[in-house]
Image (cartoon, rainbow, N blue to C red; front, side, top):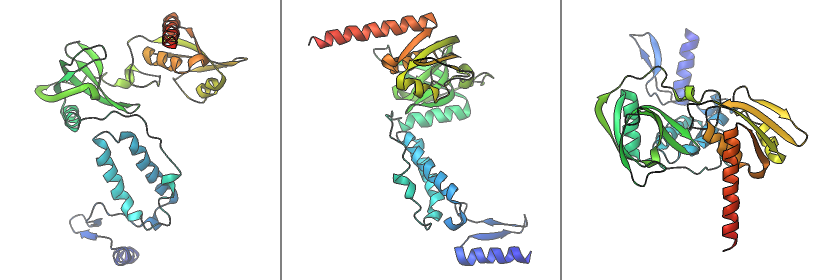
Length: 290
């Protein structure tokens, strides 16, 4: 006990630690919850992890989440500022900026409140094929973040089905008085189970086979795209096979590799890929004549 008392006295005298005694609980506590020991008591690995976490926050820069999270990390970093060269990593370990979509704070606050309280929201929304925004009502299930943009995974009452809404296309979001019961199968991850191509998924599971060539073959083989994926090494490339409900995103994935990707199955993927290739070829000829 005398050793603990000496340690507490040392912390108070040397580090101005706001330590107080709670007679009811018979123990010591920090009067200031944000107090942290100086960096000399923090391992180099933890300092690096904290610095990298701050860098990763740049991915969320255009959302209301950014300032709150940044301030929280700053409060942890302040007691570490006396460490030798504490910010060495800032210009040596970099998270490249991605194209991001700003989220109106009022929409963010409305949606997070609706998620917490299971309340139906109403809003104006312009879908990809709409010419103007239309009124919608939805039961918010989850917020999803993908490629610099936020999406709301929710039950659309007018469609009587689950939909994904882009927060950037949503305006005038308001809480209604109506509440809902969260279904057991609400989790987005159940619908996209086993494949990792971003937010959008469908109801039907497809079996995919795609061959990648040259640099794209190495690029594909370095990553896990779906649970249970299989790679087959060919003389001039890599064949990958997997199943997924994310048909549209897989099509984008194949098209993004240009002439270094060749879809083999399913037939729908092959036909859609050919349709886009022909369309790009026709556009190139038309634009080339200008």
